[in-house]
Amino acid sequence: MKTNYKLASILIILFSYGLSAQPCQHINMGASINSEHSENGPKISPDGKTLYFWRWRSQDEKSKKYGHDIWKSELNSDGTWAAASKMGKPFNTGDFNAVEGVGRNGGSLLLHGAFNKGKPSGKGFSMSVKTDGKWSAPQEIEIKDFKKMDMGKYSGGTLSNDGTVLVLAFSEIKDSEENDLYVSFKEPDGTWSRPKNMGKKVNSALGEAGPFISADGATLYFSSNRPGGVGCYDIYMTTRKDNTWENWTEPKNLGRSVNTNVCDIHFSIDAKEEYAYLGTVNNSKFGDEDIVTVKLNDSLKPKKALVILTSDSMLVQNKVDPVKNATALHNFTSDSSNVKTAVSFLNSKFNSYNFNIYPNPTDVNFFLELTGTYTKNLTITIMDMNGKIITNEQIEHLDGMYTKRFDVSEYSKGIYFVAVTDGISIVSKRLVIQ
Image (cartoon, rainbow, N blue to C red; front, side, top):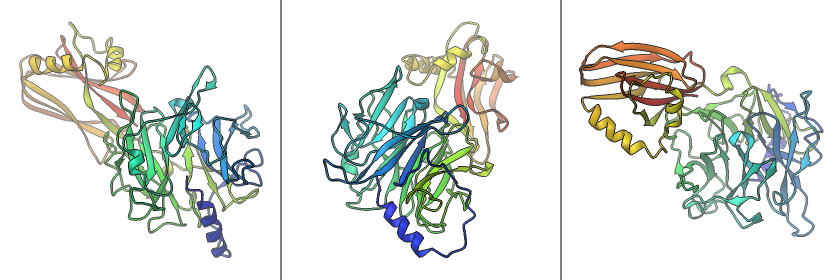
């Protein structure tokens, strides 16, 4: 955790004292959250009802080390925040403790540092899962080659809401204070894939830190000290173009309503996408750093995006009814043991034509393409997870190529199925509008 940002922020605000006031829209969260100590690193649960953050701790009596502890606050029924309480052991040790991410709709916590059976055991990341209202002892997660790759002075990360994707901030350069962002995916055996650099669109020649993935998994917020910012580190946002996590839109600076002339690093938003939470020295009324909220305008909220999943979902039955089988299609994922059988069926039964869909990178729409020859009538159906048909059209006697553009910009966010059926068998592809 890059805790020396505190010192850097204080120095910069001293140099910038006397500058014209920044038109930021920070709202200090008040005494229930903030204290005479420094608070930062806010992580809001997806439902917006629990706020985790760290509070700077003076020298620990036993270890004689400085650090910070994890605190949390619950949202009251009247919309106010309850007085924050310090989380106990094993979450807090005599070191730098922090919640890096909240996943599974609030049911799992990604924690800074490696834990073994609840005891700290060095650098890395750990997970704690809530079961029957109780948190499990933090346990280190195995990220392939991470400890070999992490050579810099600081590291951080975040967890997607569905608990399957990590975005990590670290450096492969020894003792570097400036990080790049990497992505790691959860494997079927519970381990995590080797972190992959997220590329030059996201990473600059300088530093990136404080990643946060929106609840729908499509938008990434992060901090960077790249040229053109308002302060030493600014918050940026970028939208994922596909399911590879390698193709992103040009990062957009969130501007002066969020960023200040000091370092703005830790940022999170809930699933309602109404407010953002961050730590700052710019509007601190209690300590050197306070937690503030910012009401997001529409331009700063996660953008609706289309992601076409690379694997086919497929159901093979007699007299297929796409509506009745929507639930079965939803349950048929790329992890299913029936994938090989289904693909074999596709190659033997439908070898006379190919079915593909391609996202349009400039808009929320896609192109459907059928090529080949097929003597039976085919039906193209787009349906939602509940089996509601959105679009349904007939193709008579495919001969050659059939293409059509489908505009889904007005569709609600969620999972949809694009199915092609001859009335006997059905092949579908899942798409996600995020």
